[in-house]
Image (cartoon, rainbow, N blue to C red; front, side):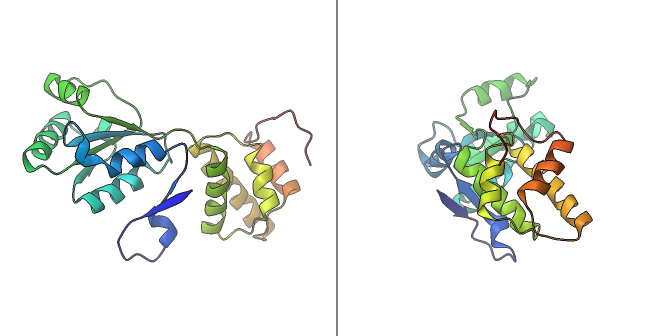
Length: 204
């Protein structure tokens, strides 16, 4: 497990680090080898809260290229001209989206068909635990390793679900006026909000 750090001076280091795991390693490797792409553009796809925008910013800073975030909301003509400009200037363009959208502009559609696709998948087991620990730290919550391990077995394996779990436990901690998390409190809070996935295992 490694991290990519954005080379900028910012107050919070964790905000500029992208954790590399099995679920995203292939995309990271392709970004590191952008000079071998068949065209000077890549299409980065990943679910919400997967760090796709952060990864794109890191890539743009390191490669001196450009990025277009939430591409499905950007005028297609703008993406088309940015794609052409990247080829002319030989500087990489990374187009970021959750999934491939229905492109109406034929010239852009043909260019995207020739563009390599880089995919960020759902978080694997190791990444689930690391992300939960990071989210708790950002929220100034105190979580023991046994709690994180307990949660990792019982929450949905999606980036968005992990954020919702951390948000729910933060609200509960504020209501209890204690930053310390526990398995019993987490169990009650997350069950009430439908954020626990029944694993068939008896709760500890």
